[in-house]
Length: 487
Ligand code: ZN
Ligand code: MN
Image 1 (cartoon, rainbow, N blue to C red):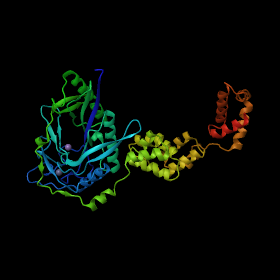
Image 2: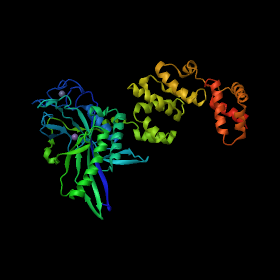
Image 3: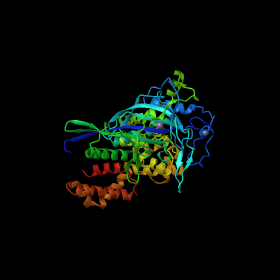
Image 4: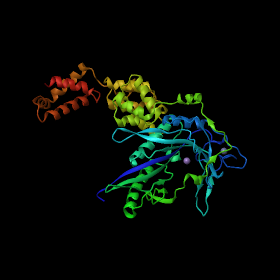
């Protein structure tokens, strides 16, 4: 055991639900939580003779995603039938793309914990339709809801470039951020908008000899937590299995496993099918897709700066911490708001603090974004300026921002109304400082004497001034006066 090392190898298959208005090949509306089988038509029910018609918006969303993932978009692509016989797939085949995917190969850049980034290769990105849902209610029967059948899915397959559960999670989170930035998916995990299937195995080195464990694919994970934990579990399981049985890739088949959220374990489902089991063939009901240069250019013009690039820029250009930059670029509207406030002349760090400490908290509580709170970027910039100029303290700034959300008033007005304007007039403050020094001669002497007691005595005097001014003195100005008088 002691001379054994191993490397984790993970590739990901990801399905992202595109937020088009209608389904992939019919005009039924996409829905969530509607009455079962209320969003269906002859096409998505798979009735004989019904003909599918391609959803142009879904194709454009997929093209946009492909471009963002550095994938060349195919000039010619087509639709294939992938045969399954499942109750939630009424046609007995899924319309997908087999040998001519819409996009790929490409790459995605993900942030690592040490602050660097890593490029993960994308093998392909293609479009397909979702199946319905089997519902296992009480009783000895199952029901099927076909509202989801025919929903457009973007399937993204990475190369096995990920080397641990943290990297797998980072990729999932980054992809969620990207598709949201592009506006092509809500990527709401709770609604199953993103589903992950990691392919995991280990390359084990024992006494100079290399062994590869059989690949396990964990199906249908719909949370970051389940994704990360299932990969961690597979690492332990495969290592144990190898030590016990010595089973390697050559001896064991690729297997499909499910994740049990309660037991936090993967469970064997079946040995993996190969591509030929699906009997792929071109769908005769659909015309191939030709992506003209002009069409592609039009889609390319909709691309935006990607979230990770933006995050890196915030660190470099504004001196924000990696963490703060990550929070601000978490969604596009927050990042846009931040940049507009900076563009109105606010100090980036100051605006960042206001937004992360108060703005986003309030937005989160109310289930909105910053603009949804009624905040104007230039008003937040004004507020930041008031703090920088010492008109108000930083904590008063937080109070005022909250009041801006609650009342819609301007920061200057609120500073007056809430009595939060600091006294910064040196002449006025000097009188108060003199009075405090007179009343506390012993403490003043301690400061002048220096040594152990001096720090504490100084704090005490500052506190006395703040008390006399009901907390409205600008501590910086008071400090300067104290320094001058107690030399
Ligand atoms: Zn339909
Ligand atoms: Mn698929």
